[in-house]
View (tube, rainbow, N blue to C red):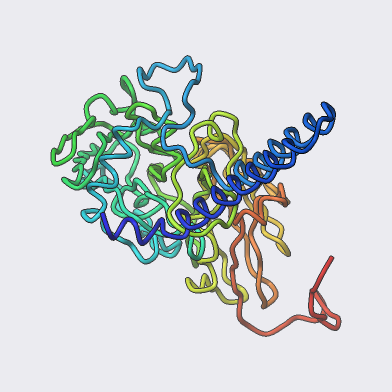
Length: 408
């Protein structure tokens, strides 16, 4: 409990400070009104008091843990996305059991190698659902729900026709049931009813990978959107027989949204905001789970090398407009299809929530290449990263004096 208090101390101090200011303002208005007999002054002061209160409290997150108190929703979940008070109590009383992860981001270089075999096989996959504490942005903490402790979860790679045996372990420290819906699975719920697992338990699903493509998987325990908005998603790549064309480098990215009660950048532990999720207004939009992790990962390639990026969108609401600044995408595997002819020479490609694609291009010039969601205001919420290319410049392609970029 004391450890949890350390995470929310700044929130508590800010809330108490605002509350003291609120009371002081109320006392000031009361004393003023006692000396005033003007009805209009009374109305004006009360309106100003309420307006200032809303201005200060609402953007910083109301000190409420069951939010929203009254919400209409029509999903199949009986509880919907609201945060019950009992869950808040369980969270704080069990806070010390959560692992505190220094970096929640799945390393984009962590990609399973291409499949070279030609015969079908049985693939065994073990995944652990685990709820952890980590940072979305520097100093901003969140209770992530993860597959294998990262966002996104591990990229799974199999061949069309393979039999896949998936075992989901729900870590005993979890407070919620979890499951997996594989978009590559043919069967009710994409396997989620079989893999529905309580904390401390395990479940196993066997399925045949019938369709090639790049598919999203995600938790589908009620409320599914709420679980995904905590980080529970990943990609499974089902390669066609013969595999994919050879490239020099592969990367793995997934865009996601996080909905916090506190304003963008507010320090300390942030609770999720179900109403913001229902309204589709995320505070953070990021690649691979958090803001600002990309330079440290050193996503590097050399001039002349061809790279392939598997790009997914964990959503839960926004379409991603994936773009690499300074490059044209030579090939795009539209909608994640690996059997259709790739679309060529593309500037920006759309990746819907719960969808995926792969893009390929060859570096011709050295330098930093920023990838973004080209709804560019989202960069300021965290939706960007950097690819670094090294090599010898070709002045016939790109030539000029490079100036520092500052301002607009």
